[in-house]
Length: 371
Image (cartoon, rainbow, N blue to C red):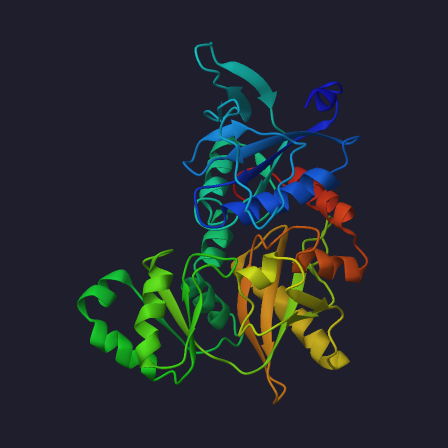
């Protein structure tokens, strides 16, 4: 921190990470990669952790935020408490027993947050009200992208193919369970059961029959009272990253990549995504050139259908019959240097440090407020 404060002429970037949801550790892992890669000759970096109880603290920029000995990282909540008051865009330190101390205005925020109370439009709304520029999508796109049920409705309305699904709302599950179960059975077996507003494969189960379905829904409800049940689609998992242009050109899609899960896992779950040696990414994916171009075009269409900004990752199924089906779009995808979206951009010719710089520059060039 002291080294970063010596040159006030540099752009001040606050990297915000953590949060009070089940994706707390995932956020820290991505933030650790960003903090390591960001160019300190161009940017003064302020690491801000959001503790699991929701408090903002001045965090360490030198600490490791990786999984170590199987233990997930957490924000150290003993740091100086912070606030972002009013519309000043200036951070304030709230040290115990002292008068609040101004830390100065932030030029741009890099919200390395996943899941509810971060990726879902909430912090984006706070930053909009404070008049602070930030990396990534705005309030509406973030909220729609977080809620898989509404996301699929928007994608379908844009003419993009999505698989069959059923939304299980809290009231219906409590008061009309038999009707909900009958509606789900019409999807066929197996089905995937997931929280509607969560990511990183948290709370996802594969139900093969009615007996396992109710237990799977209850697991998902531990993360979100609103649950999405999807028909299983046989196909290869192909993913494509989308990045906004620094100029007026249309967003660009990366080369597609295929996710290959190692071992006996039935699907791309949390451990496969974030524990070492559990998955491989083949990029470019071994698919026909015309399929790759169609997929890239569809990824950009999904990005624009939600009104995304900055970056996203769009996940597809490529079926044996040659059909492409959009599974979902992530407005703030996993962002360690080994995560899928950064790897896709590296395979396209944009290395991780360049991707981080591109996103910060995008945020600096956009105007605050309505766009």
